[in-house]
Length: 360
Figure 1 (spheres, rainbow, N blue to C red):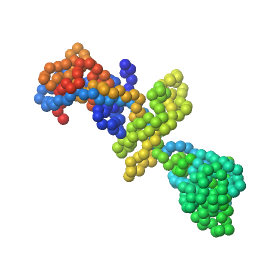
Figure 2: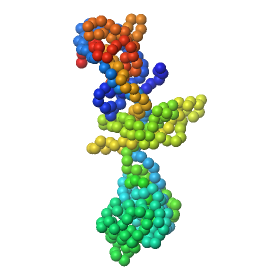
Figure 3: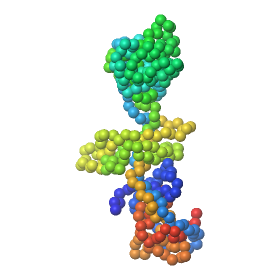
């Protein structure tokens, strides 16, 4: 059995706690006999679940990375959202010549003007979904599909009215530079173009992330075979209780730490970024921060367990336990969960036997 460091968590009848235990397959020191005068209690050998996990360091931040490019007419950038600002559906990202460019949600980029008579397409459907979501089709006359109808134009005019445009400026159409489609609401990270400078089609105005919190962890390539998108993990936050997370993305490329590039090649030194979606508890405000991630790699059911504290060093090597009746029994331990205080017993005990442990 490999003696490399691994993490272990044990659960008997209840589900795994959010904080996953970190343990090593090693043999911690144990007293040879129970010290005289120390009060003892008892514990029963029982069957439980053993979960093997790998612990890695990560950085709490935000998921996704988006470049917000201008696709309208050339002009002077007159305003833009500030870093850390959160921009949702229908809100203004920036202004060119004081003309607002707003965010709508969708995966198809704006690539043409949208008006009555335009050919059918997926960009029309995602525009209609946005108009309906913002409440500009109150009578439900617009069919959300690939076709730009008179009801679509009417919904756009209602949206224009909500922006304070006078009736003679309500066109019922969108030009390519009126909106930017992105998959999710965004959090601005940087201003790529300075207010007061000229922007043209293709100019990057802003960069952003999503508003969803995520941890980016660097995972050794040797561990990747056991990690999958959708896996549940535990995340230890600074100054807060551990929280659950879920693997949402595994990076395609491995990287080697800068300090290792001049040395001999080491496949185990290469890492791959793994993104873990998390939801910090309410009332806890966290910026970017270092965290620890416990990624489950293997689970075994029905493992025989006793407290680590029950183990005593056996003369000549190995371990033994003291049974409740006072007799000693040699045992063969397997994996240790030092954080949870449990150890797997491979041989020497039967389920239901009672062993002595220090009194708590």
